[in-house]
Amino acid sequence: MPKSLFGFVLLIGRHHQIAIAALSVVLFLAGTAPLEVQRRIINAATAGAPYQAILILVLAYLGLVLLEGLTKLLLNIYRGWIGEIAVRWLRKSALAASERSSEGPVDALAEGVQLSIIIAEAESVGGFVGTSISEPLLQAGILVAVGGYMIYLEPLMALAVAIVFLPQIGFVPLMQSAINRRVETKITIMRHVSQSMVQHVVTNDAFEAQGNRVEGLFSLNMSIYRIKFTMNFMMNLMTQLGYAGIFALGGYYVVTGKTEIGTVVAFISGLSKVRDPWGELVDWYRDLRVTQVKYAMIRDASATAGSEADTFASVERLSLS
Image 1 (spheres, rainbow, N blue to C red):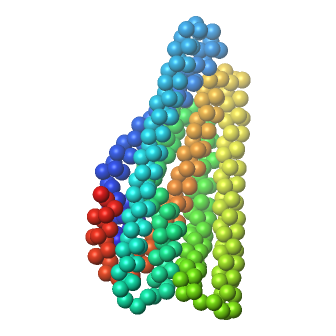
Image 2 (cartoon, rainbow, N blue to C red):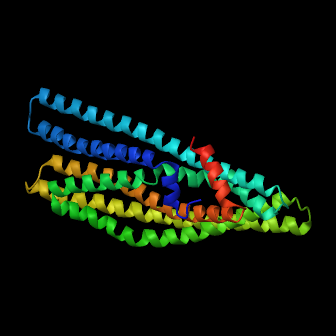
Image 3 (cartoon, rainbow, N blue to C red):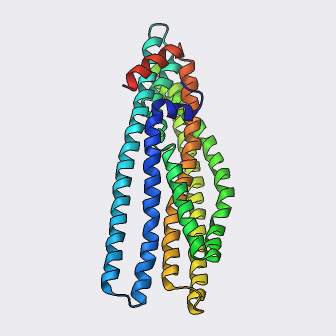
């Protein structure tokens, strides 16, 4: 197996990743344009423009929304297909290693690890392959496009929105590192559970050990939940502060005649559009760090299962066909 997670991503289908990246560019461009159309509709209505002109803008808005939705549908299906190919690759790799190891003495630990990979670990690692490149490109593209548009409309209000996201650059990586350590421990415990099941050892000590492992998994999961949801709470709080800043500055600018109501509405919609991509980008980063840990453990397990080169070649022929 490739040493790095992204080496595995490119192995599964670099040409498909290029196509997915192109769809991502189309999607974030199509997703930004409706903000300007929305602003023009509101300004046209408040300025007493002819209804025909407003109707044309509404139809343009609907066309852009339809284009965005269809592109997103195609992108999601494409990414799901790539992810399932990666899952199949990993599972066939584990099966090939299992078949080869059955020729010699049975190692319960190796059997348990292979069982864990086939049942659980391959799903999350393979699923990440479909979004590994397109997701950050798409979400970062939306952030840059919408952020640039907001700076163009009103730089000071855009600065207020940007300040909201700055603290997250600090606390998100720290909290994610804490989650990663727990995920690695969780995978190790799950493999020991699988190992014990393969051994079929029925003693009081074995039952007690399995019970302790299950309790350990419970504690680890609860710890992960606490960190994860605390992080979500802090991110949501920052976003609401951004809305408060827009209401305060926007209201002042409208009252003093320095801007139009359509600009304030565009900023509110813009923050909503920025909030989702920012959250998706944070989720992608969390998935990246966790998946890197999981992939490294699968890779190391495959390396110790036997002749890795033979497995790699045979599985590649099976899975990429």
